Image (cartoon, rainbow, N blue to C red; front, side, top):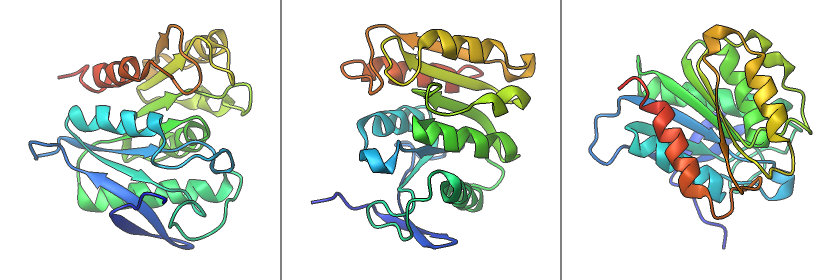
Length: 212
């Protein structure tokens, strides 16, 4: 049976199934939205990479929201090849901004979720930090990041099937200095970080805690 979420948030097409988790000790110092990989490839908010990324952000003191894009799980609507999914991401940000006013927001996305999330987060002033996991540079155009002025972390496996690590390094190196782009290449890791999920968590926590 498909695992259920514990929350439904408003979206232009109806509602998005979501899971919100507060830091264990309460008193969130920020909030984070985590976006899942391609729905047509089986991507959901319960994906292992998404779950571990959310756990890392949560352990770093952020209230963390995972959403199912339109047409996934109990979310209404239909898959829209990344176009409508940007609206879903904005709906997630709206919810976090309402629940955690004045708190900085981190936007993280895995694979397809990174393409959607980086575009949305780049343009939204409520988002302070960006995290792109398994950036699929061989499948999508990420040239829009040339205007990035926000701190951004790329976490990538050196055996990723959807983007060579060298291309991700080159992308990060091309960004403006204000982006403070960081790249963490995890050795012997494929696109789904099989057997390397703890290294993924560590890289994300290190980035979030860099100013602490």
